[in-house]
Length: 123
Image (cartoon, rainbow, N blue to C red; front, side, top):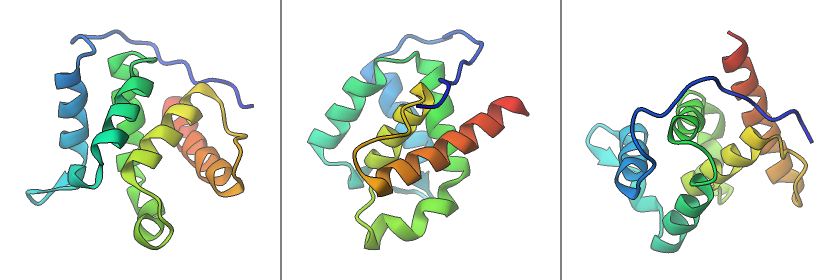
């Protein structure tokens, strides 16, 4: 287990489903094409439940970090079965310092996200 990442900040907006959806749509819409359609209803509901365990500004930090480093994961999205929902869930795990998880591939990706987040915080 890695050290959890601690951000200093505060919420300007409350954590609501509307604000959660706005963050997802903001970061995962490109050229008018939304990648949100990749989320199934169960995936988005599970992610929302997990995301509510952190503050809204922390969730946005996690999603922004994934977005900024999306090029690292793009090739795995289609052929490897990795989804944006998975990336966000792995990002939440990484944020909490939970990088040693059941699957080797998931551990690798979660550790990679953790390293990118940690580097972002240190800048």
